[in-house]
Length: 206
Image 1 (cartoon, one colour):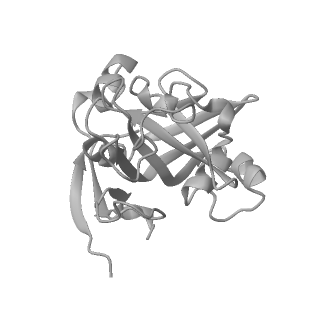
Image 2: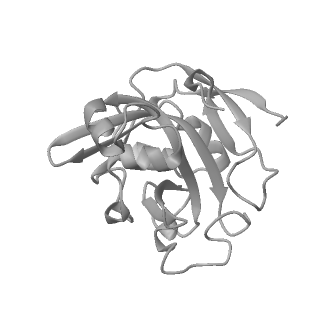
């Protein structure tokens, strides 16, 4: 059984509620293991072909630059991971095992390739469009590949800004505390002991 730790993410500070992008960028400049759980409760929205889709983020994983053996930046900069070295808020999208697009929000200072993988959420707007994209009505946004597909995110959105681009990171709808669970990351073969996977307790994920 995986040992898990319960903690609380405080979303009552001013940077979370209706603040300008500059403050959101400042918030994203922290270490990924600190920023990741605080992103729980935030929203991710896409506007494509006039259709708005939006989810509440409920599952994330932190990846900490070249020191993290599981990070794409572990061996240094490449053409593929170039967006990871961009400013906080940059979207890093990649094709996983030739099957699914996965997306990360870059955090930390520019030039330091910290990332937060967005693994799942709860549909909020555009549910019918998500169902059309997914070809089914259940498990729309549970898991990182399903999440990107439901939101219509592809490699075309790689290296865009979640502060001003077509895939937009938005503050929570209401202030308060988001209880979360932290566990070791999954789907990786290195640095598996780090408890850097964070899930909102009400999300129902496991």
